[in-house]
Length: 314
Picture 1 (cartoon, rainbow, N blue to C red):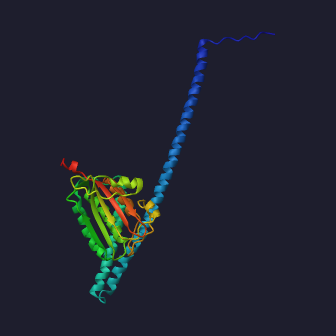
Picture 2: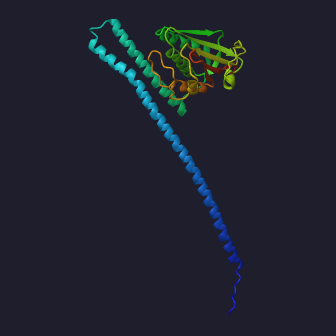
Picture 3: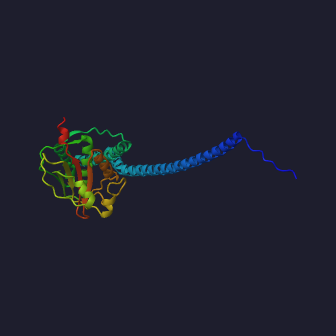
């Protein structure tokens, strides 16, 4: 039987075989890395798809809500104009003025809702211009209160403005701050029954009340800080409305939230106001929160840092 002879491979052949195995192992490692990367990208794509679906559903809900809420004031305007065109010869001047006033109020509510839509879009897209400058807070608040006193008087609601502070500046944006305060005052009037009162207080403190609110929801009393010592301005808007349930308070600053409390004179509500207010307050480097006992009204509190040090540079 012939002997089997195994011819030893040359060194070059051994290197070639070893290189092939190493290349095969390297390709396998690369393949596993590629598969892992594809899995991560697939997870990310699924997350982004769910986010887009959520945004799309949110936009659909918003459009349906806006369409529904615009329907009533638009109908009031259309019916009012039609009535006046057909009956203007047969009705008194007082009745004409009443119809016109209701139409004007409806147009105002429509404008408010559209402004909130535009503001929300600007804030969430990052296109809201927020160049801050020194702003005297007392005169700014007095202007807003003066404007809303006439609107509150239609429901026999009295708005009080209380402050013991001298002129105090904060770094802010006049238009954005005004929109914040208009929203809060509008809500205080909207959800209060007739013949009630609303208080607007402007206080100076040396500490941030927001920190106490976060930890134990206990607000320390005002420390009577003067303009030379206060580090924060706190604006409180207190009403005598129905107050907020514990469930309401958890949902308070979320978008499209419909609270248990309802406007007392049939006013419109998009459920967007407070979510916008919170974003605008944060844009101004402030904080907002609420204290309320159900059945005993609500107090919304906005806090901004005082900027005396910054003002020294102007």
